[in-house]
Image (tube, rainbow, N blue to C red):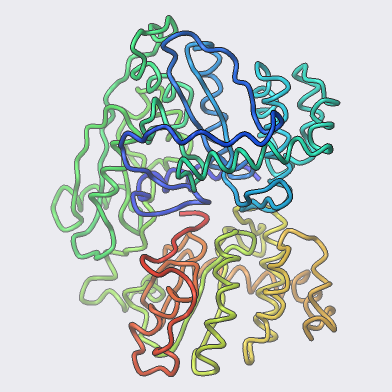
Length: 535
């Protein structure tokens, strides 16, 4: 899978409050150095290459299979190459486990192995390990196996890494790395600090180069060759009738990513805003639009040009919204394009719908939480599942996490179609979620769950499944839903969260008399547990 650039861009314009594949936007504040890690043995320590006096300290905390972490690692590598010993750089990993025998990471065992081999390379080849990591990142889904080739291609002894991986040294390194991330308070990938200050800027080489040069007390020679930044005209177009468009947060997100934005906020109801809307014809709002100045600034163009959609004399990027301004007009719901918009959906009591990607770790957690939710509400709650992706049955269906996710989406939607009664389809999904990336889906059919293997195979591999998934994708798209998981209570009230208590609270907010609303479920005790894949 390659990183969906448009998804990453949506993340930066709306993610002042959102978490993407574990990514989070941190406050811009000075954070003290973490307490020293207790040394179990020399095997848990990595000796960093000696930096120059006054070198800028850069800490990066990632997950080896997180696309946003991969993007950050690839982005900082050119800056590290240019600055050399003028940067004191470390890379640690975010995960769970306090001992070498008990280690886990969000994307599963393969990610744990990927973390380990990268730490082994950092220990045994500190001057070359980033070359191996960037090589691995070309296919980051296979970091557990592609390290040997990447090590050899970059002059690193694969035998030393293998001994580290298989002999137990690597697991000690990872336990210590997880501990450093935990002491630093790093729970998202990537979490980055420059001289103790949380970094919120872009993820290209020049972005990191500028941030490091700005933090340097004595400017390294490489800082003298940074290209001049040109202003970029940016238009945030929204609608004041939209309750969830969060225009201010979008504007703040832009300011953190474009170095010299000339920002103008426009409203659909005003002449200038309506003129821009009519020229671009974006459909849903809010959007972020650019004129020709986007192309004139090399960094901004590299970051946004490939994802900005051309429209007249402008280009634009959807900002993750689903507000259809035409549907908010008096006769809006009579228009064909508005039938499935949230504003025009009819209230259906005691209904819960979830939009997911089957291999999104947040979607998996959300669906697992439904065991407790469904047990609590029983058959009084109407529950259904939809999927997020692109394409159609005729030209092909796609999903963020690749073809394996499309295949699983097909099987799960077929299970829903044929085993919706009493939510029987969830037995298949809960079984699959124990090892969602396994190709042996048949072990979750037959005697294990009572789901007919042949029926699921015929549906998922034939036209029936493709048409079901196409319709599901179209429904998500028509509602502007791109983040997994996204919940819909009573057919029209959207919310996010991955724990049972957050789901219960939102269902009961609109169905106070529903049996089970008086019982608190497990999950967060305060704010909802957020998280999601996509926008």
